[in-house]
Length: 395
Image (cartoon, rainbow, N blue to C red):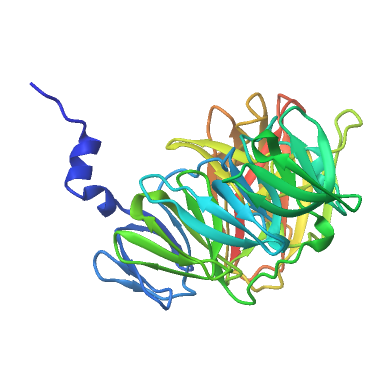
């Protein structure tokens, strides 16, 4: 007897698009079928409930994938878009964006919005290489054999396998296929975020893409980039949609009133916004699989962080756990204090890698100050790397 996998049966029946999603709203989280997102940003759920724009701030379909390894381009706003460079001139780069099960779509990205283009798989680990993290007054072209050339790119033509550039006032050309990456002049970087709310999409291939507008008809997502390109994405390829610069505030966007780290043996660890404390991406191993988070705080036990709230928020929420990349052997204990009074937490705030991350939600009750304390436990300082994924304040 032929056995057909249930996933294939659901796909043939069109049922995969009917799976519920998690929607985060100002009033809390809910699970429902997403039927539509209209032009005004309102969500229409399967039972025809309507959630107005401004009242929701996140949609999740499944665990968040790691960012693409390559080929991809990274923008100065942090977006990472999987795709192949088609061509470029002095004004813009054209990227052939790759999305599974979709026809390639061409994106136009101004050169001033580009940070780096990886033309092959990114080399090394997820730590930022020095040649990329340092300020640059010229474009940096890194060859696959490790050689580095500094210059100003005039154009790129993938059909001719050529990169034309100026080096010390002289015209040169290189074979595109021999390059691993191009890091662009940071002095020329210009990227203005929208003044109001916008969306950030996470795709199944790891792409992170900011868009000014977003609609959904039950089968296809239609998004317009800050550079006026329209992108169409199949329902199953969008893993998450987040509202940026909305009513919800991420702790990583705030400057703490104070941060104190108490070393175990003279070492020092800084607070890491939107990264693990090691500087690598934040990864938590959940029951549904590993998730790579773009927002949150990376911290190390033992430390204390305080934020001024001004009585403006009603809820603090985060997913707290030991980082799956560097905290496997670590353990810690987290405590939250509102105006100096410690709050009850799940599992008494104890965090271990084997126990998995702990969802934390605390009613702030117009508190004026939030203090986060991360303490060592029996393991001492060993890999006490804690991620507060998507740590945010909800008004």
